[in-house]
Amino acid sequence: MIRRLVFAANWKMHLGPGPASDYLGRFLAATPPRDGRTLLFFPPAASLLTVAAALQERSDARAGAQNIHWEPKGAFTGEMSVGIAQEAGAAGALVGHSERRHVFGETDQQTGFKVRALLAAAMDVMLCVGETLAEREAGLTEEVCLRQLAAGLADVAPTQLPQVMIAYEPVWAIGTGRNATPVDAATVHNAIRSALTERDATAHIPVLYGGSVNAGNAAALLAQPAIDGVLVGGASLDPDGWAQICATEA
Ligand code: PEP
Image (cartoon, rainbow, N blue to C red; front, side, top):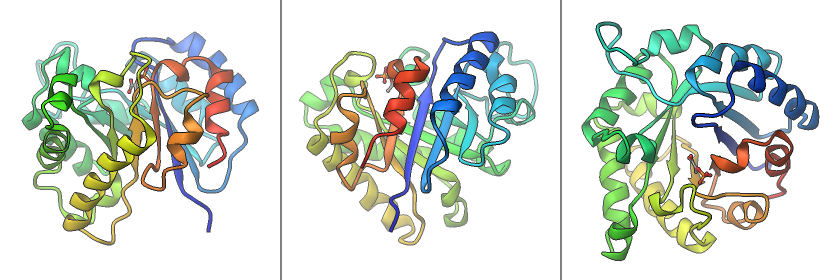
């Protein structure tokens, strides 16, 4: 059976519309569709239209927003609603990325609001969870991840779970060049998987790993059966390097 894998690129605050278009021209030419592989791009909001248009002919690839607000409209300067993201071509959004949580102070409760707003619009959710270094050193890794998971998925109906993906991203590994070992990551993935199975044993929810993934470590991480894909920041910014990671044999 073909293994299903998700390769998700989080461009953070890089690649405006012009560079995004050049990037995708190069990347898509180097990356033909492959059975069982889904490619996701999370560009800055201003590049969503461009990215969604560039991916239109590719049923294996989708664009998503890096963040959304849960309210449908209103006086929320600087925010983007689910409806506006959808109109700009987003099929889904990241929720609870560690930079949203730890740089912008997003709470567990707010992640739940965002997840429910996306699901209500039939959009995909990539819910990110992960512990800080202090939490890891205090032995709280699973407790923190499962708490964030429960808060993010609060009031989510089992019928909506197929729209959800989870990214386990240890905060200390994001953008630091330090990644969890494949075995350590798989341990947390298995705990997340057990919690998901308790909600619905039939929903297949991909659980991705993120945190300093690169062309040198992707194969070892994806060799773990518990790791269903990767969410990548820095190493997704170069189209050739990202094409190489998306071609990883696993
Ligand atoms: C991320 O932004 O989700 C991420 C994992 O970043 P990096 O790959 O740069 O650690």
